[in-house]
Length: 352
Image (cartoon, rainbow, N blue to C red; front, side, top):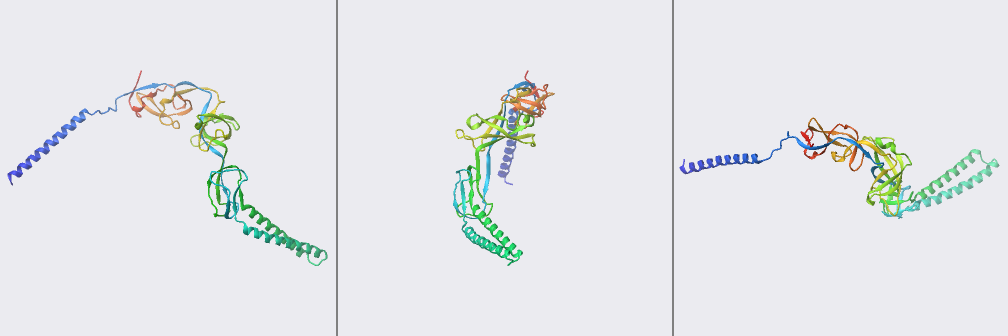
């Protein structure tokens, strides 16, 4: 083998070995400078024991406004739309004209049916006279009377069909959806429009089991509406559910009259302020200790030098404190500061 080639190979090997040693040394230097958190080290936290806090004599329950009435209006008859009396967004009054269906053939049928009734009526008069003279049998006379009744029933049916060709609003409201246009061919029951009545609204709130007895049908309550900077409105309890949901909450419906000065729209947020409750003095913890949401409240408590994440049952709350119904005792040490740095079973020390 050429000496020159051997020399190149040797130099290459030496460079590779030196590079590997250099990388290993750099890695050791970096690891030496890198801070590695000692998970067993105790973390400093602030704790508080649950204490008794006085909650004021008003409680707030958040909900959303629903329309007083909202229905899909359908066609009473069948036929082609030849006249339309509304557009989407129109304000409609009860009894106002909405739709006219083609009833030309029905009117022709009515004329024919009315002629038939007249004919049957004349036959009935004639046969009544013949029966007096014993010129016909009673059976023939009975058949004439039945034919007259049948003809009169047919007239009633056709008149009903013609009446159904004109559709009017069953109640006042706003057209929130238009489903047909001129020339549409409808079958009986086909949807025409969605009519929404917000002259009054229903605020639906979810009330915990422990508070449901504070509400009574017909009870006057104060409602704050978010878009009006919590301006107070008056409402009345119109319905209370007799069955709780899976979270042991009951649906309560509050009826409120809408106004032109401060109109409320369906879907807006509102909160019920219950003023007839007594102030309570209950075991509570600072709200800042709460982990997660108020629907599934959890806190860290210190037990045997470790942080334990536990669930508890929350009750009434205000801006600073939340009531403890169950799950935490007054002897527990609840972590109120430093939670961001800990996990379940982290070692902790309390700030004395």
